[in-house]
Length: 228
Image 1 (cartoon, rainbow, N blue to C red):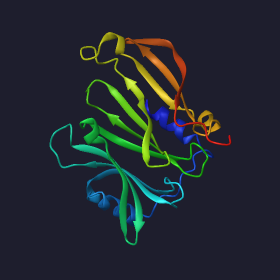
Image 2: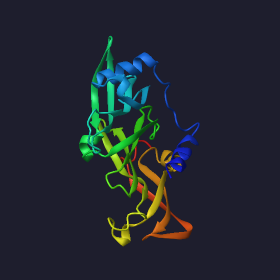
Image 3: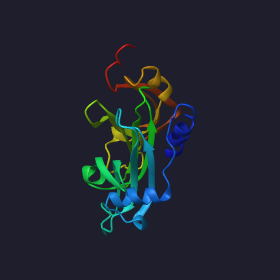
């Protein structure tokens, strides 16, 4: 299912205004600023992007890494860091430890940077796998934006879910399968006031549907911009 979501995101050419990746040595610097050894990094996305209004560009790093712990819950973690460059140093201004927040069992972090409200400041879209329940495939996403004071999570939710195999662990009415795809075109038309998603339901209560059921969903991200 994840491939469908990723392909939808890749299809945003022209709408996705991501800055160029930093040089490899700068990526290593970001990992070390997070207290990580580069050799422990499984996947990492490091970008320079303006995510703080009026403050130029920051270094944004989302990393999936080996923690060195032996237990399944904590062996892999996903963390996010936003840094200001101060000479040769990177000074953290916003950090998230998703493993600590969710009690572990996460991996596969992805990062997208997009100016959702067309104000010149970019927002962060983070996603990662949650495998706490062995027979449930689940991927979680967050939209993180600056509200004028600080970075905050404006929306979070499950974007991929398949519980049809979890016959013993999940109640019958929750053994669904669905994929949510961000509709950035519709979201951009509201200048980020409303987040639009297209939910494709493939199975309900363990039963595969003959045809996917498509539901258009909307969630408030922020108030309507002034003078619009």
